[in-house]
Length: 346
Image (spheres, rainbow, N blue to C red):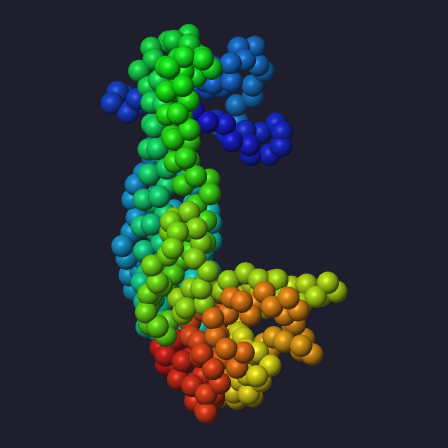
């Protein structure tokens, strides 16, 4: 079995072809590579230019601790897995988002050094989850091959014959179609696993925790569970109107903390300004509602925020919610100071 992935349209491609790891690795020179491409595509006369070859083995490995002293590891150094689900680059970039703002805060004297310990606490569980999911998706291809009846096919002709059996108006053909439909369902977990792709929930001292997410009503791998519970990623919603439509994710940029509230929580603005001045931490309050710079014309954000209009959400530079207030409190400045100093290990 093999796969073909486009690198640049339409003339540059990555071709992956399997080999038996129980025998010495093959020598993949230019002639061998051309033969593999032609064989995989079924085009024996195809003109092929080989730009490079390499041998690569599937990995199922993840680090449980990502830091030692002044050394931090990220990306493929801490999670190695097959390309199934397309999680590699996404997860590596998320690692950097998580670590970058923490390093900057410590180096600029805005946070205590123990903030850096939260990198492992937050990202190691993500590494474990995506490695397990990618390998599970890779193994689930076996179910497709079994359903098609090609697992033990010895020749190309035998493989084609067995695949063609699914078209037959016979009990065997019907059974093969049923088995194939069931096997295809497992591929939802490779191509539509929004819970794995978007559902990172952090637990660490850089989060003022209210506890774990409630048990999801739907499959946690397939479905992203929208929440503003501290530890969750800021949910997406469109705000504004047809003249100034903005995504909630753009309301909270990467270079600062953002405090999000509603018109009834306008007192949080003064609190944020005072705390910014006191702690020297980049923080800006955003009030969402009628007559404000950011409106919620269709109440899309109101349906997601899970706090009252006077409440507030504190969003970290990596867009994860680290604290929230259900409603406006008697001392908003004190509440915000307590939350932010806790998050920053000050």
